Image 1: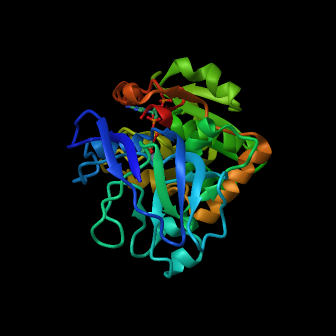
Image 2 (image 1 turned 90 degrees about the horizontal axis):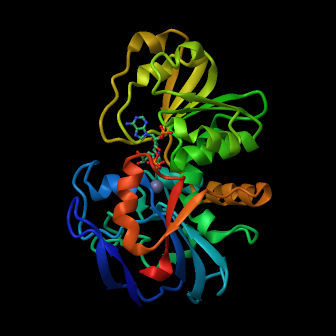
Length: 346
Ligand code: NAP
Ligand code: ZN
């Protein structure tokens, strides 16, 4: 099927229009008309090769919301007309312990990403969601609750699940004190989820202008980290700190904020190592953990939770021609709070 989208022809190149073919449906595939595609900071890291060598031409995009247009002969999960979401991976081995436990993102053979990857046939380069049409095995797609707008749902497929998963893993609920570092695409979803789960939520942001928005999203406190000494009063204040910052930062300042046995979850992936002060880690048996998106069952649970609580991302809908500018603004922390491309403009 002829598909239009945006492509980076080489590392750091501006995105340009691109036409390519999606595969003919296999028996377990569904085809979808993409309605909205979110812009994740991971797209920017990969176009700029900040995570190491990448595959070009690259069609980025792994926050996809659309409508099913066709189903393969053995598809049971979807029918034509269903609203459907696709996230950060499109395949996995399906047989390892992680995959059989619904943790496809931690597939022992490695998940197959939605783009910047070679598919499991060993030859096909995967093209992502900055496009108007997509084909995927039904097992790797999810249903979207009917009451939610697709534009606000697209970012849930990465930003949403990436914050929902650690909040569930670390059993956040009433009485939990949670800090979210960085109020961008990921961070703002963390605030909404943690608040909906009943936690006391503090936003640690280096952008003072985001205070009102943070409080409106459900945060109870906002701390401007650009003010020197801003974190000093928060030593040992939190059960969980979620670091979503896309740039390098002094992780030790944030480790200090953990209570006894509490955990700092690293989510932002700037592509540079952190220097951990071991003394800070030992003092209070503090922990650092990582967390990467979520598996298919958890993505579905997250979307159902969003449907019940009326949670979507705060989005700025843009045309395809604005994507380079949107990248610049995202890098400058000037995103409120996710850019979403109207796929009819590809
Ligand atoms: P984003 O929308 O650009 O948000 C990042 C936020 O970090 C900014 O809005 C800003 O918040 C803060 N920030 C940026 N530069 C900073 C600096 N120099 N100093 C201090 N704070 C800074 O990015 P995103 O899409 O949410 O992604 C965030 C990170 O998570 C990226 O590295 C991305 O690759 C990674 N990621 C990880 C996963 C995973 O599975 N673990 C999934 C998706 C994305 P304030 O203005 O509030 O300070
Ligand atoms: Zn992402």
